[in-house]
Image 1 (cartoon, rainbow, N blue to C red):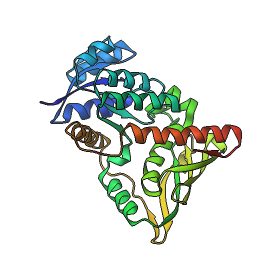
Image 2 (image 1 turned 90 degrees about the vertical axis):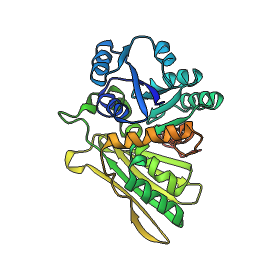
Image 3 (image 1 turned 45 degrees about the vertical axis):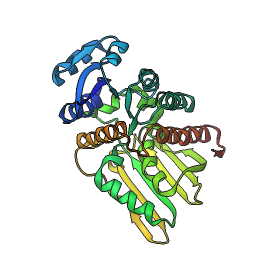
Image 4 (image 1 turned 60 degrees about the horizontal axis):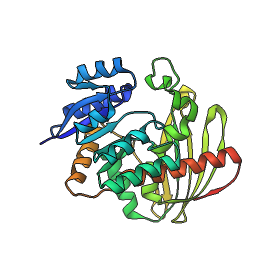
Length: 298
């Protein structure tokens, strides 16, 4: 039997990535769609051959799992509600915008014993995951340097109209992408310093439990000519760059579905809500450091 999904969200990510990926997956079935805009939910349901639901609990009652493509201030409530109903979770990043909200999701997942995957895109692109696995196994890294500069507020960019991205900026939007690749190599963060630069750029200095130190520069409002994604580690083995992800994002989401199905069957992995909460903890500490001018210890 395929894993029956309910899709929560009707924005660009749901329509371009999650919905089509679920429909295309041989071991998944898209049962229905719920959205805050009923007209958009109806339109997405029609294009995916599913049903639009107006009631959250009714949709939860008809599925085995949920895929969430909602803003990170809305996602935690849906995720917690779904977990308490015994539904498996395929969530978007960041898991939440506050540590307490992330903690509630983790508690609900642990209490219900459901499977969970958080879709950090690059972690589901084969060339990136292979590079990170090799780097983590090698060890001996003294630090890393990350620059993730996007420019989403240009005409025609569907994510530029996102209210939460305008409010929370690159720290919370592209920050999870950066951390999802730094943490597996350098380990947990114990200390965070952050300062804001031009165009709401956030600059982080992270001390890791391993003793390594990394720098991370994040923006979603960089000048178009300055768009950049660079992740470099340095240490005993010299200097190594992490490649940019290859392949379609829909295919990466399909691998996330694979991982959720595998966990339902009993497999283990390290990219569920506990890792999602770890990332939220670092981002929240960075936000506090940036706003107060102080070093924050985790």
